[in-house]
Image (cartoon, rainbow, N blue to C red; front, top):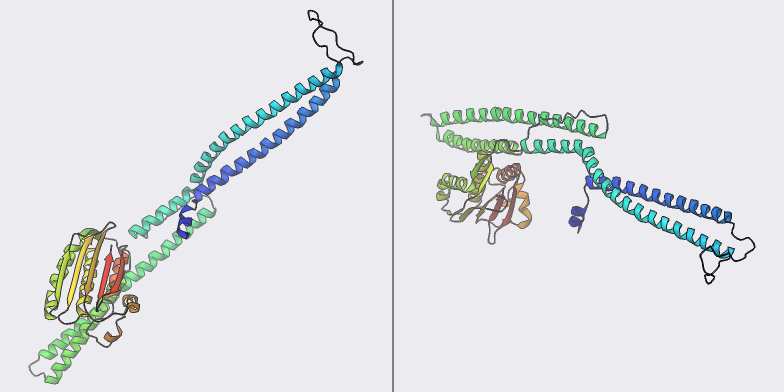
Length: 395
């Protein structure tokens, strides 16, 4: 009921039109009523004056017949003649007032309709600066071009203040996004370089001919830890970059992306003895190919890592009425329904997996949701009966 009431609410343009037309109609009704009262008062006064001035047979004797009239015709007294004159004038005044009300009402209706049309036109003219602000905001939201400004040059009124405030907000957002981009770029370089150097030094130390078994075991452990740190940093950087609106988009098919990702994951699924079910229908959409590949890759990696040996993985893509859809499901441990939503938060994993550092960093589904949101899509997940999870992404 609330949604229906919200849809039936008139727009500001309609409200302004009704205000303009309503004020005109009220003013017209008041003017018509005042005119009616004035005409009625003046007509009654004129009738009284004219009847008083009538002087017909003061003695009350019957009037004589006019030449050519027969004696059988009724002769009127002065009182009768006075009454006839008064009645005739009252009828004439009543007809004039009725005509005033009828014709005045018709004229008021016609002019009122014209006033509503003019109110609609002038309301559009008054709201045109707001339309300009709305169009600019819509373009910025779609293109992420924060360099665009409204630059409204109208009078110093409320609309001018709103436009200037919006321009100030865009300027601050542009500075914030630019600072974030520079931070991600610098962090990407500063964090990856030391890890790459450490990996090289550990690899050289392990491969030395005189390296002891303890050194080799320590080196292998450090390589595993370093690999996890690299994946963690890569996930954080991807999450920071994918939360922004996508700028570079191109047409692609999620079915092709899914086939490519499954081919890359074949070694891991074979090692875990997982049965992969492919249902790759056409799913055309538009977006950043790298980010969308990462989205499907994270879903497949999540379904592979949080699975049981000899389990199953399902990947399906299809076209929908609103766009494209990809669904990844897997067998595995039972996922409580109340913990499903928490899996999309950064660094959140099932309680039984928090001590298993080889499973992942807890950023996979967070990155999936961030990429989907950046593309204007949605992500939902439901636990499967018997264990595992089914994740659906709609773009």
